[in-house]
Image (cartoon, rainbow, N blue to C red; front, side, top):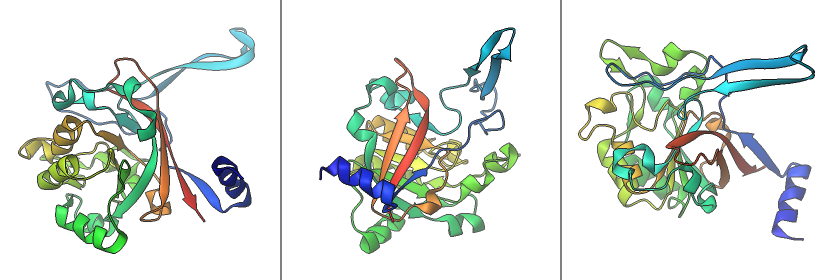
Amino acid sequence: MSVLGNLLRDLVEGCAEVIDLTAPLSERTPVIQLPPPFANTQGFSLQELSRYDERGPAWYWNNISMGEHAGTHFDAPVHWVTGKDGPDVSQIPLRHLVAPAVVVDKSAECVEDPDFLLEVAHLEEWQRRHGPLPEGGWLLYRTGWDARAHDQAAFLNADETGPHTPGISVECARWLAERAPIVGLGVETVGTDAGAAHSFDPPFPCHTFLHGAGKYGLTQLANLAMLPPTGAVVVVAPLPVVGGSGSPARALALVER
């Protein structure tokens, strides 16, 4: 039997499972909030065109409107100034959208400290236990933050000093960009950077270093708790928006059972 035939058989027989890593998309989906004078992205909205009525007696359909970076979404290199000469979302090689993935779980630490930062030492320890990061694959960073996705205030977790959400240290972001063999970083939070990353040097190091190195971001993921540390295959499906800095995306994982 062919490779694809084996995969289909395993899915039918339950030896493999498809897990949805995508947050439900509605007007309640949290979106990032930037302080003045910066422009903010539009959240999701649905505008009904007809619903089996005089506007269209046999059909139901809607217009949708939203920003590129709302909900579970893909960040292309061109999203950040350091990657401005890189590919837009329509130019991403397809081999990078179907790729192996590993999960680094720091959810327990993030319960204790919402400003927790992943460090290079954490990844070195993880590799001693599980092996090297996947060549041409994705690092998915589990923080448990998807449990807050139903509530904008809890998800952004902001106070007078700014948002408090877990992320990645400056040193670790540089290491992922320059030394790790991955093509992208996936997170459960509203963006790949920590909530306090505006105060880092440089600010927003995940965006700065990863996009500058031609790598990608995948944000507001769900159900990472259902994935093993190694062995999953991620399928990421952003819309091929010509000139787009990113896109809402459906993210799926294939895992063996």
